[in-house]
Length: 495
Ligand SMILES: Nc1ncnc2c1ncn2[C@@H]1O[C@H](COP(=O)(O)OP(=O)(O)OP(=O)(O)O)[C@@H](O)[C@H]1O
Ligand SMILES: [Mg+2]
Image (cartoon, rainbow, N blue to C red; front, side, top):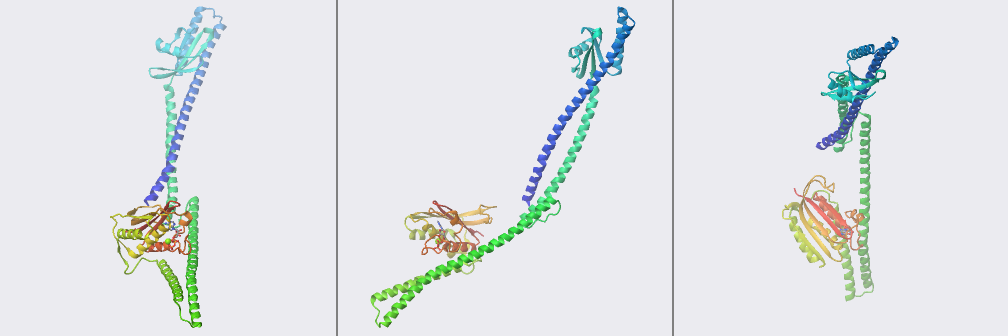
């Protein structure tokens, strides 16, 4: 459950994080765009206002000039001066009425009308550019200026606008942007929360069912419902296939077992029958000829009975091994009791050292912390022996066989998924033999699987090991590298 929470939280995080980043980036882009828009808008607005003001001022000047021309007073210096003075005051009135300021110079030198002080006016005169809106900072306030000339009188008229007049407009635009931004963010968050829930719930539902190995049954949003139904169908199909494969495997196992049994018993019976008929033929001949058996006849007859005995013995061993294979449940009976794995391994090492060819070195390494386990000592010994004999067969030119014990704590999922978590006494049997390829490795626990010649192996050794270890609730795992050797690990539960 903790896992699912983790997965869905991660999923929510994966959805929310990119969307939040996208919203943030969109907000920043929008903000930059709006700021640009505000500044463009302001500049255009100021420019329009300056052009309009200049148009009005030009009209005032032009009207005065025309009046002078009409009355032919243009050459009368005194009247012209008075008229210019009146024109300047009309311009000042116009500027004042429109909350504008202005400076008028003649030939760029003589100050005819100034704004506040002549010093301040000089700053505006220096900053102003002809027929362009430009800005200048004075006393921490930004001013926009626009200069145009009334050429007939060599006047330069500078119109000045205080930027504070626009700040309320800019503030208004900013506030409306911010409030729209905040509402959009809130709406976005609400949509995100809804999406988060809408996605999280069905996925949670499907994952929970999958974890419990049940078919998901989500009803709701079409896409998730479709997904849930598809997963359910796939699970059903999988179950059907597993059942089918298991039945096939079972049949295959029975087929292999039957043919193996038939083949092996037949081999043994051929020996028994052959020698039995030879024996009876010899006896019948002796009876027919009415003669006593000679020394060499007796030897031959004895050879026949010995061979019959060996074949019968083999058949009996095979029968015993087959009945051992059919064992399924946990061991029961007197043979079950405490088993000291280390003692078993040490004794086995001694036995193998004495019996295996001298070019095979047998080493035992034991971990003294392993507790005594419950099991059938004889059977476990048999299992170790079967594995060790295979190792010996895989090292025809000699090598090293190491049997090592240890405690294995399996936590969570291991490389071998079927190995249940828990505490085990592990026995590793490692050889430096021929090893096996993957194909061989996949079949070694099957009854009658062998790569050895007919008279050498029946292919029941490892099938018996598997059956013994299963009866102990344990596991046997084989690993091998062709040309390098093999490793068999037996895990026996410590209860
Ligand atoms: N240590 C090993 N190295 C290489 N091959 C191995 C090893 N152990 C088992 N095998 C392979 O696995 C096959 C099956 O082994 P298993 O012990 O079941 O049968 P067998 O040894 O052939 O016959 P049996 O043990 O019945 O006399 C062997 O024939 C061999 O090919
Ligand atoms: Mg074997």
